[in-house]
Amino acid sequence: MNLTTIDSISQQIYKELRMEILTGKITGGTRLAESTLAKEKGVSRTPAREALQQLAKEELLHAIPRAGYVVQELSERDIMDLFETRLSIEIVAGQTALENISDAEIVQLKDNLVKTKAAIESDSLENMIDLDTEFHDIIYKATRSKYLYRICMTLSDYTLKFRQSVIIIPEVARRAEKDHLVIYNAFKSRDSKKIEAAIKSHLGVIITDILAYLAKLRHESF
Amino acid sequence: MDRKHNSVAERIHHEIRMDIISGKFAGGSRLAESTLAKEKSVSRTWVREALRQLVKEDLLYTIPRAGYVVKELSEQDIIDLFKTREAIELVAGQIAIKNISDAEFKLLENNLHKTKAAINVGAMESMIELDIDFHTIIYKATRSKYLYRICMTLSDYTRRSVIIVPKVAKRARRDHRGIYDAFKSRDPTNVKEAIRIHLKVVKEDILEHLIKIRNDPFFDRS
Image (cartoon, rainbow over all chains, first blue to last red; front, side, top):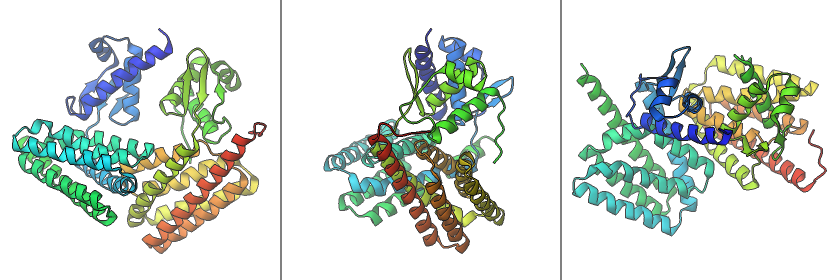
């Protein structure tokens, strides 16, 4: 097998495993071994090893000498850090997007809001996470910055599992929809102060939701 | 800062990486496994592993059957990169100023002394490492693991196309001194201004240099 093939197989395994970790399908603390992974995915050990190494570099796994890898478990402090970092970066992205957003993109935001409203009204909250991700993605793209986009996407991926857990709570979904409307209006009015306030308030509330959710989980586990 | 290299592969990876970041291997240069292995007197396996790691870090790309090429950033990429880095470093600076400790101030002072000495003797490699360390101290003072990682990635990216010439190093040291003073004053506005000035100067130096080498096919890169 040539190097290019190994690379693309390892990339595919990497992407699959990454999503399984980020969506919570594989939970924190799970052990992963090269040989088991290779067997499970029907590939040789080299691409399996490389995928695991790459995830370890990203700190989604940590290596245990001679025993394989363990899926990283985030502490409450880590989760707070993650969401607070996302808050700071999204404010930067919002300000940058405001300078560049096109009328077509503002229409896309509007379309997203219409779909979100319909999803809430018909009680089909299973699509909410995709709609939420899409809304923010339109803004990231409007930054016209490859680097800022990549950072925003990484933070969006890392927070996926948590956002997914709370966005299906009807009350949270309804509030997110209202917040998105405020962000949309801020973009329409092209007011940078309003954008900052709207994003701050939206993501600030989500942090509170996540903490409440985590507290509930902890309570239930006893 | 002392960097420990657990394995030959890690050491080789670090050395090649520094050569790319410092511009010794300029954008567009071809790197061959066999030549590097001979130069560094290690087996080709170690070199291959290091090169493949650098591909994942986006510093190199592969051409099937022809080896590895150092990635070249376009002018637009560099502008995007610096704009993003500036926005994020301003956020980091504002958070760091709330948390920076006396011990960290000492580290910054120490760094400024060593940088001065390195400039006086013209030690290029040390200047680059000291520059990285200076910024790293500030990133760590944010107390945010995620923000730290984002800052490190952006700072690595911006360095890759830089060829540090003494003029740039001297100016950077003066700017670092300005950042240090701003932190000492504990005034967020001063910090913002000092970081902004520093990154603006570096960006202009890099662009000027880039235009010069791109317009001059006989430019001596060594």
